[in-house]
Image 1 (cartoon, rainbow, N blue to C red):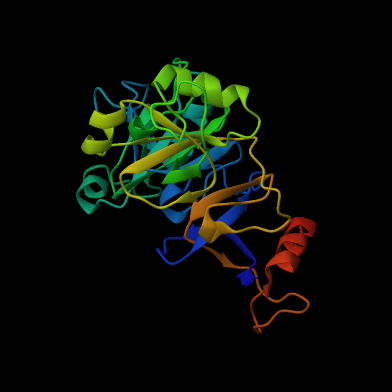
Image 2 (cartoon, rainbow, N blue to C red):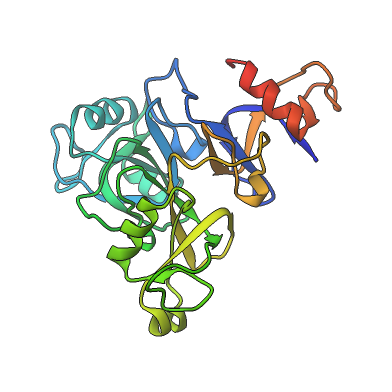
Length: 278
């Protein structure tokens, strides 16, 4: 298949997924632009809104920490208990907290809550105090990344609640996956029928499959055995992060199949992007 090289920010498109370099930065800007698909270095773009941080100096709303975008980025970075910043496309919220020079953003803490009007930039060093994963609540333990969908079946494991699968109580699922090099993460669901039957979490392997009732905590060290990226199958090579949407146009490159763009066969696209700092 053919793939397109790109640059941040990404644009929302349900027909596209991208593998983003985890070393990618949005500098020279010092701010986060989650609604445009761009977060500063050390922060990860996620869907939804973070939980309320509480008061902070200069907030425009008592009981919340709402600041101009540039100040929000600096304030969150300076606070160990700030997990990230959230921004919205909600016109009513934006009109209430309007700024003449820059958008307003909300500092927050894990977990995130699903809300189609909001996106957040989450500190990649953020950890949860829990030893378990709570993907449906937007929280994964240190070293794991929250992604949408369900991982592929891992297969049997000791103590499983269903033959042919690895379904374990939440705390045991986290420990079991961490101890297994071939476990890529754990998946959880909001499906009431599944929960009433199994009451646990599902160990799995890449790729992920898009199912709205499932979310997963994926090992950040997970790699694929392939040298290419397969974003539509939920798999990116080591050092790349799966995100929804399409990256902005990179421009021409040698061997492109479309003038003005960089469209290459999958294997060559991976090598070409890796070789280019921009």
